[in-house]
Image (cartoon, rainbow, N blue to C red; front, side, top):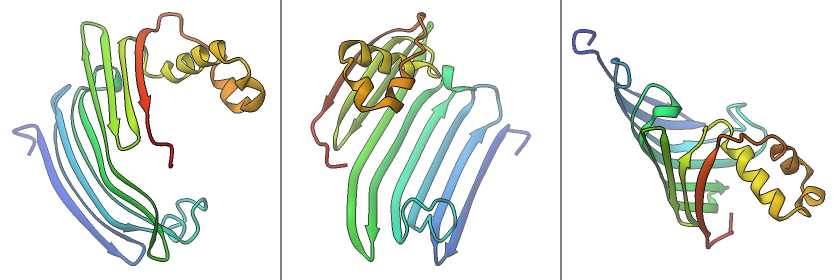
Length: 178
């Protein structure tokens, strides 16, 4: 309601190529909280003409988000992806039990953390989210210059580095099955 500055809703789609339910609440006040839940029991992106990348493949997953903030630069909260399954003809091709992202921002510092079946990643410091991927690729390419020849598309990412980005990265990738 507009009186409480809160939107609340839910929707269900029951189609042969998409079975999903979404629900959520969102505060209309600046920087207010947002909470969403999405359960996709079955989606066939190729049949829906969303992508031709996975012909005949289907996906299912659950996603939950609890966030505050008015834009990504001041966003705090979490995003969880669970029970992800990619299948073809009923046979699972890839599964992911969970991927948990958390973001915190205070006093100009950002903290971003990812935990999943395949690893852990933590980024902490002063950085611009829009230029963070380029800065990370720039660091990697400076330390491993041979990657430029092997992966030219990645090399283009690392050409522009935001010199104001100052951050620490801790990463542990322990499963590369994907």
